Image (tube, rainbow, N blue to C red):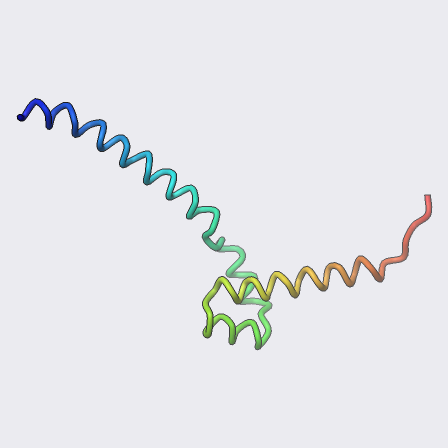
Length: 84
C-alpha cells in the first residue's frame, strides 16, 4: 500500500502544479495592471469613480478606456489629412 503512495503522489503533485500554472496564466491576462489603476486614479471623472464604487474596478476601467478611445478617435478625425 505504501508503494502506491510513493508512486502516485509525485505525478499528482505535478498535475496539480501544471493546473495551477494554467490558471495563473489565465488570471494574469484578466488582472488589472498597476499602471492602469494609477492612471485611472489620476484622471478619472465623476461617473467613472461612481462606477468604481458601484461595480468595481473592471467596469470603471472599461468606462475610462472607452473615454480615452473616443478622445483619440476625435483627435484623429480633426487632424488635417496630408496628401502624398
